[in-house]
Image 1 (cartoon, rainbow over the protein chains, first blue to last red):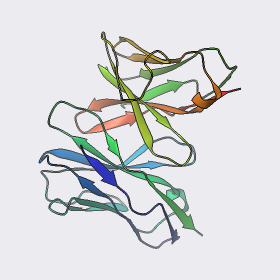
Image 2 (tube, one colour; image 1 turned 90 degrees about the vertical axis):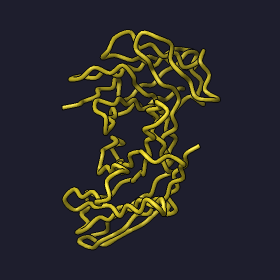
Image 3 (cartoon, each protein chain N blue to C red; image 1 turned 180 degrees about the vertical axis):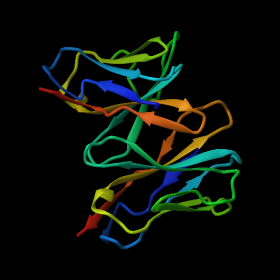
Length: 116
Length: 114
């Protein structure tokens, strides 16, 4: 079974600085997607960034970028120029593409606080 | 685009009553929808996969008779919590997959059973 591990339950960063959230996963599959979701206090799940496993290039979305290391099964999220609105729970998620399952596998989350 | 609407956002019900939560895909058709439960400060736990026109698939440990799921159309899935008890109080979230590469989530329903 696939598992997703987020080893940092909580993190904090000063406004305008950079922070990296860790995520590792375990799978025997070769084709899959990886996601980072943000859940602010409103509890709405918001997609931050996605990565296709077959792509070697790391995904980037404005201030958000990932470091995808397929061999190491690592998928960290870097937030640059942190803003107060980035304060939220961040969940790393894995989606297998083989076997027909559409079930997302979530990590336990990292609570990020951006301090003014 | 790709909006999932979930209602109600909050509901308080008395113990022993039933509560229905709706999840609608507004601008796309969803043959499959997913229902999650989230306890405070925890991750999302998949409860069941809702399949249009057929029975839902429940995860291990989820009571089928307590959490009734109906997916009668390509845009609507409902979760009914039957004979609710205080321990059923939680945050429930639905999601659907409008495109190959991603999921869209509803805004969630906070259920409080008193």
